[in-house]
Amino acid sequence: METKVWSVDKHVDDIQSYPQIIQPAQLLQDNEVVAFPTETVYGLGANAKSDKAVKKIFQAKGRPGDNPLIVHIASRSQLDELAEEIPQVAEELMAAFWPGPLTLIFHKRKGVLSELVTAALDTVAVRMPDHPVALALIKESGLPIAAPSANTSGRPSPTAARHVQDDLTGKIAGIVDAGATGVGVESTVLDCTEEIPVILRPGGVTREEIEKVAGEVIMDASLKDKAAAPKSPGMKYTHYAPKAPFILVDGNLSFLQSLIDEKKSEGLKVGVFAAKEHETEIRADYILAPGKTSDLNSVASGLYDTLRKFDELPVDIIFGQVFPVSGIGEAVMNRLLKAAGHQVIKQG
Ligand code: AMP
Ligand code: MG
Image 1 (cartoon, rainbow, N blue to C red):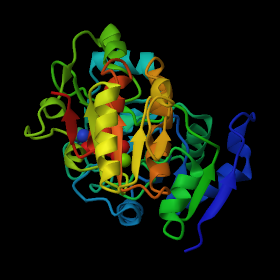
Image 2: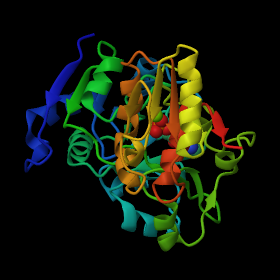
Image 3: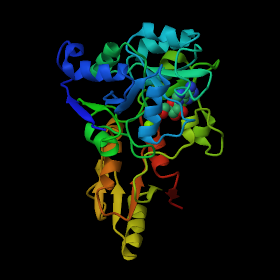
Image 4: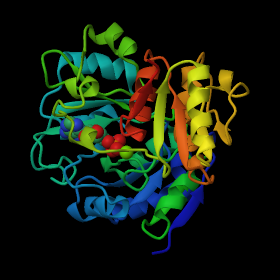
């Protein structure tokens, strides 16, 4: 299949009337899949009402069928068609964070969406992305758009159109390219069907920000305890992993250096996923630093691109520094732990 690429300037006015939006919107109406930018990562969109269209998402990504998809909308009124009841706390969260990187789980209205979107659950996950191109495309299509990240399942999520091309060229109808995304980690997933909302996945909106609006929220047990059954089916899958073994190191710089030196003495090429503050102090074969510990947003923004860059380097093993688990750091560490398959070497 030919994969078309449309380049669009996200700053132009009246974006919805551009052929770079009208053509991909038409393909979405024709039940084809199209990748598009959001403020978090690139999404792989399809008509959420069509089995035929949604099936193509799972096929292109190689995504397990029991991992439900987030439905993307462009206006608040689209939600009423999808959700059975909207609790007051959700109204307040939407007023505060939509459009934005917060996905809310509602009881679903039956018979509206393809059952493949919700993996036959009786709930539906919905968000409104904060990106002019995503909003224009969804509006122009006139549809609720199911969209997971536009990567091959298991690989790091795409934060640039070229990441999507690397994974999905020939497998999807098109890619709308509007440059790099901003936030860099996926949306926070919050279950609003419980008395006290539950964070199923940390993401672009922090727990602290949510609590200011919604009061106390709970972190799903599976986020802390790997053995607990996840409430969000997708949370059980390994994700984001680079090709070489990736291991996190929880310790000071000399401890990290001793691990690097040990591997080098075995003749291995060692990569390090580092904080920018430490980049010049570490001695290894390849050191990549997405951002500073003192600016965790920069780490989030460059996280997936950095993991993908290691795949282009001849490294045998990658050590990763750990980052503070506060604010967006909660999402950063969640993704790094998944990328590492939860392997952490702790300084004794
Ligand atoms: P991704 O498409 O990779 O961003 O992942 C979407 C995330 O949302 C996965 O972790 C899913 O398990 C989760 N999700 C989507 N729909 C639901 C739902 N109805 N209930 C719980 N989690 C959901
Ligand atoms: Mg994903």
